[in-house]
Image (tube, rainbow, N blue to C red):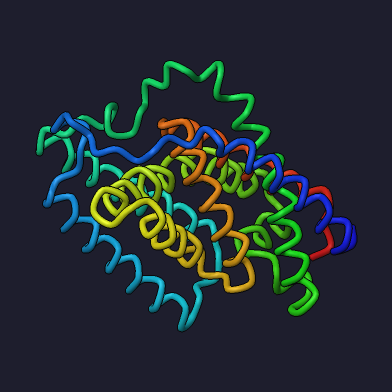
Length: 257
């Protein structure tokens, strides 16, 4: 599809987002200690952000080839970070259910509009990627993990990538980047500064320069969905759906890469 058509669809998608964000709640400081981050969380967030930034810098010097072992190690790596963050919160009498809105009583009302927000975001992301594609070429614009999925010859590798993309990545990345890093940055630095910093880290951690603009916009969208619904379940579900669509698309449309 041409860039001009994606541009028209992107304008329509952004129009829906303006409608969707009309109900964006004002940021308010939590009144319960169990539902708020503290100075210790701010320190942990700064340390985690610095640690991720250092890993991004090191990996960007020589990006590692994606293999089955690398994927497994990445899942374990993110899992350990999640366990560490949850343990830090629980030990300090913070309640992750309250902090991340995991009860989500309004899910029946919110979910249809949230899924529509994802569909409206697709043209914006595709337009961004098409522009990048026009400069770097299709192979270079495809992330290494997707190339690994396309080129893998065993069903075990394909299942591994699918499980990582549909389960491990959405849950762990949303808790780390939207739930914790953005939550702490929003409380101490404001909504927009926190959104920008956490989205930049999210995009950069994928260590794939051509994908970073679209990943940054995706992260902004996921954060706004989190703000709109006040539940981390919403961006987790949207992240799962987005990754599922990407996996299906590359398997069907890019078998030659």
